[in-house]
Image 1 (cartoon, one colour):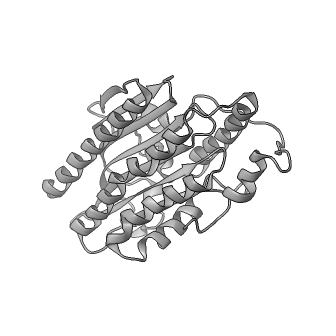
Image 2 (cartoon, helix red, strand yellow):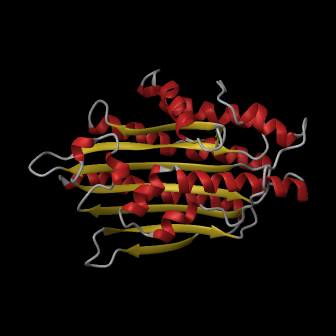
Image 3 (cartoon, one colour):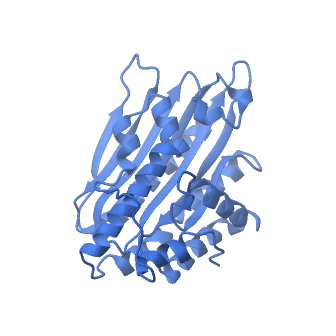
Length: 305
């Protein structure tokens, strides 16, 4: 594989991680802790990365933003389920992934991921593809927040074709869905995978646009909600909905499966887990309550724009 494309992507990803964690540290008042790591020689997966973590802050109960760059001898099943011709190929993967869990139940959890994967079939040219997106998981619904988040997502993709936002919005709705509970994880956003349209530079440019839009999409919402008054009822509801977040990540998320199946660094892969969550048998919100409105008006497939 030519080193230049990978080096270019790595440089941008490292800078993106630094920009996001710096901006969120300013909101919280506490700095992220940087945990640099490198896979030991002799392990099947080689590579390095930096996990940035902020726990027990004033705004964030847990916020993790990780960069990783790994190489392996064989693509795991989660990466080849849509590309059977690449079964058995070596690979190189790098990306930034984050999940932020604010303290305040009125402030939504957010997820963002941007990544590039290159398969290395024996005797053939590398096969590149990009993936990623961002999605919002509120515990209490606000129309203005949903509209703002989706507007930024749409605008980030606008230079790359009018088809991109509708396609990737629908893909996000379908992907971040708890099939075993028949409910969405949140209000969605955008999601794309196995993307390589118009060549390397065009595909990478679209990924940069998505990653660079994250702070504009999330920080205005966080600032609006982080100091809202709340009590035990709101906290209990937040923890119950966080349980759904855990279920999705462990049962359905391809990124989690890829990391664990390929021998990735478990502590970094599972940094997306909330520090506290709860489960209650057949829990149902009170009819007409704000908690019920979340399910009825927000955790449904909607055209927010």
